[in-house]
Image 1 (cartoon, rainbow, N blue to C red):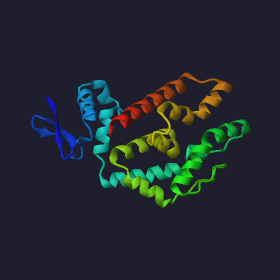
Image 2: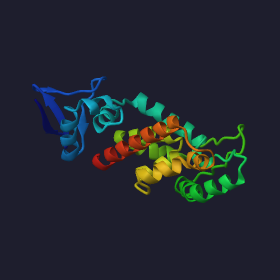
Image 3: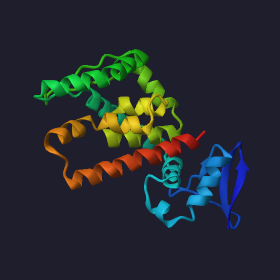
Length: 220
């Protein structure tokens, strides 16, 4: 039987008096009792244990991060930002460019203002940004492991740090994130239809975003 124990203002888990630890040997610990109870529930669920985006596996991933892991993740986040989906305009269809501008401009503008950085729109395969914002680096440094995991996982999935940042700050929900990150697929679907394989990919991506949203809801 696994028990929840309050420890240093957090909650850890014990099994037969041994503290449950991550693969690297760090404590599995959470910030609140609700999150802890959900861990207990999911640890007995084989389906959840196999899902890398379940609350329990996102928790294990977060708790297992060391300083080197976190620095590597931050570099990957900045790399994604340099080619952010919201900045990509390398399309022939002017109609679609208008759709992108209408949907993405408010988020891009707000991101630039918050982090005092200038981002260019990517109009060719040779263009990209080279973000060196001190404010954004400070923001990344101040994220705790759970938040860093959310930003990293979503940015990797959506190819957009800007949209993922707005999700993390609860400016958009997972439904909006899914729609915004799939504008191209939606546009192409209306023109050419959508193959079954892409439908499955889209469905899986939606479920991942929903799972991460559940994780965000319960980490604080």
